[in-house]
Length: 352
Image 1 (cartoon, rainbow, N blue to C red):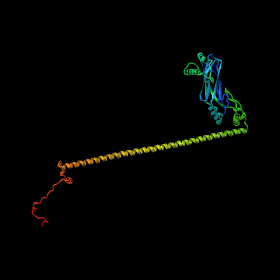
Image 2: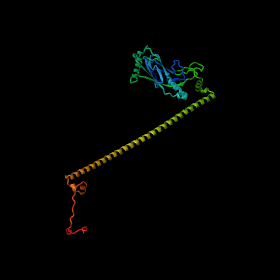
Image 3: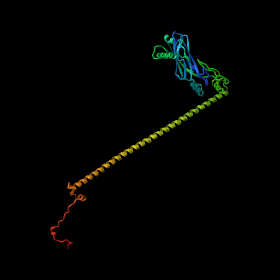
Image 4: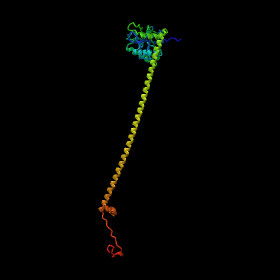
């Protein structure tokens, strides 16, 4: 068997922290939460003070007071762990729907670390008053936090780590349940005080926890109740599946509508681009026609100017063109036909 380490605090309970879940817990402190108490004892294997720190994987679910401190030789420290009411209600709802088996596989864990500290450091905590929950004042808490940061970031000071699992159980309503440092208020009879539970609820829990003492009628009622809960769970699963299918269909329809809209918009954009290109071509053609007409007018004007110049005697070449000269008013000389010499003096037929 391995020898105990001088800087290792003795942790009680040793392996698991047990929290008792009730529907309406009657807490003496009035916090309405399940409580678990953990005791850290100095092993008296060294004369040095030991520092401790308690960590958890669910810091929002559990309230640890104090979560760090100093333990002197020959003394012990009590750490109170509270399960907050919101998570207690969630766990109770899970138990009410699925039973104890749903709570038997909790993944919540706690880690208790301890190490030796010097006399100069531990002297700061001697005879220091504590606030509610066993916490030190702010300056000492900051000093402890800095010390732990230094110890866990490559320091040569050895640190002992103790891991603890978490168990959640449902209280037996016929009396208080306490195990491994856990505590919960007992549940009174239906005729009791403010902490009492309804008779129907008490009977239901008795049936769950004392099945071996049930009569055949009670067993039949328990099986019928479980059957109803199973049917409700199946109906709930069917409803969830139907809602999932509806949402998937709606999503697919939305995707199709979106694709259709994108396709129509793309077609409109392509059609608009074709219209703009055709307009550009038409404008280019119309521009070419105007240029040709302008060229034709320019040629006609040049021709008229040339004709005018010819008529005024500046240009003689066009005057020799009979058709053009006649059209523009040029005077052309008529050529007289000469009679043959042999027929001179012979009267024509009309003259006879």
